[in-house]
Picture 1: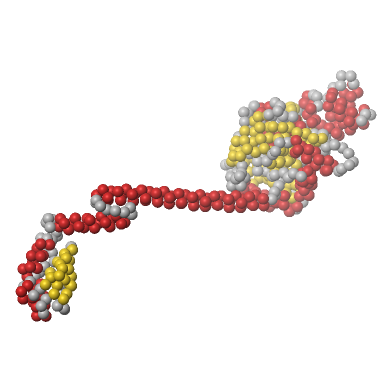
Picture 2: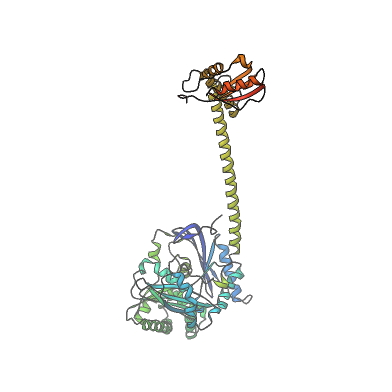
Length: 536
């Protein structure tokens, strides 16, 4: 529920949530795709898909391409994201050196630094970059910038739009291939000049790498179709037949010497242009070192092609291989034990790489809408707050219920204890029972007060009262006399007012009583009992 909403799908190269990705590489005659499943640090390559773009006049090429994309998506399992690699032929590349190591700082100044170098206005293009080299001591970064006109990117995305699907990432074919190359243990410490050549059907893509750093990229609009056309013209056969013979016999047809001669001459002419490009790049880097060619693409399937290149152009040539990469226990190929050469580009587009993991041409006007994600965040946020509020209410209710239960139990225990101590107490409410117990306690205290030497004796006060009052002279008649604590309540009457004055004088003669003047023959007066020396 909270995937990609509040928690990132991956942290570094670790995928918090499992993710299935369908990655596309679109050519003029075929659409290739690979389906991978990422979980934790493991990548499972599940399917290799291929769909031919059928020729015909019923629909335009973009429509037929969109149909091929749709067919591949229909044969794939349910996926979470779609990646695609745009062709380098529509991209302008520029190398820059910047005094930053931080990706974010480079991103901030990128457009300003590269715009003067572009053949078009930066506002008309989508621009992104990869870091190809960093000098930690000097705090410098070398980056390779890719700029593609918005109209070209829009045309490319329309193929997916017509197919009814939308990519989340659009990378660059040779950038992705470079990221894959740097991840392969076999090539990790390569110090020579290395040229990655994708020998395709309609075009040949070239990436020049110097001492592990991607320096130059070029796309030649010639491929196997061009070679087959030249072969068909000289051998007077159909281009389709020439293509079949090229892929079947390669550079040596044991029964046709004419084919062998023509094939060698045509291939030499074709590769001379590629060799010129390679030598130009070598001159630009200014290093006279061995140049190694790594070959991939449909053309790499021509028999003896590497031996031909090594012999004719004196350059070491080998087929691009991912075997050492697949030996890693974190990478699993489900259906077959190898990766088809035709699927190297789409595999590299989805392969996790520190070099290309942040490269995405879907930015600015082409950035995927986050409205849906925002709405999900609002809904999930409200839901979580509601759940939190309900949990808080439930917790509060439960705590109150527990406290009340504990209070009732404590009340019952206290009542039982008081009833055991003070016999005859009734009731079950603690306050009432405590009042009754306090009354009994007061009575008990009064009962023993006479025996407690630490408290004033009531007998002493009564004796003092009897000794001081002249009952005959005052005619005193006592109705009630109550002593509580340090107070004495006297309700009485005297014969007349002279007798009242005598009574007041008798009481004043004692230092044990304090009271207000008496003003009537019948009186009810509170008298304060004054503690004597030695009493507490």
